[in-house]
Amino acid sequence: MFTGIIESLGEIAKTETVGTNLELWLSCDFSNELKVDQSLAHNGICLTVVEIKENKYRVTAIDETIQKTTISSWREGDKINVERCVKLGDRLDGHNVQGHVDVVGKCISSTENDGSWKFTFEYSPKELGHITVPKGSIAVNGVSLTVVDSSKTSFSVAIIPFTYEHTTFQFIKNGSFVNLEFDIMGKYVAAYMAALSS
Image (cartoon, rainbow, N blue to C red; front, side, top):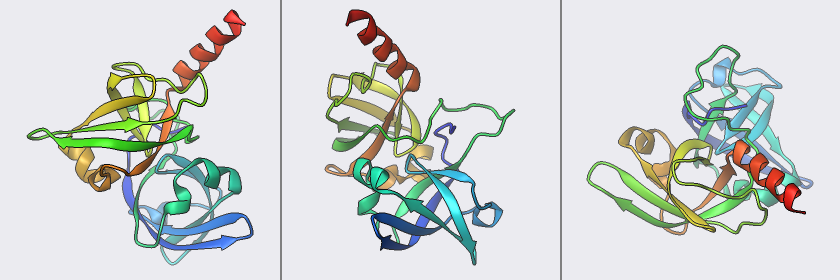
């Protein structure tokens, strides 16, 4: 489990297709602290460290992950949000983020508001659980955020300068694709209500 509070901007050092899998070598501020078999969130995607060498680490994305996230578009030199799993006893500063991407969204608006930024994203609600509510939680590329405006197929978030400068939000433009993970409690409530009505 993650919190959506980004620890580091990682950098992709190398990508390689192996069969239907995608192998990625990355580095981040805490690469030297990692261990094999440790899970990290990369732009909201939970991936396992499978090898460590010379201050870089390798992860593997299988076809399921490649098809349902933005990972296939990542290239050498790209910056991504990286977060380690929560340790028992840690403060939960964001919200419960699983690292399981629900759907890819698209930025349809980004505006600077004299010290903050407002981003609006649209998505296709393939499942009932893909919902947002005003003042609810959403993870965008793994960043825990509060929903400002909400509709059936879009939502907006407000970004403070610290978040803008320390995450990939500084690179998101109109037309950029992002990984979205909807609030787990909201997904369970939606599934429960659907079961009651069927």
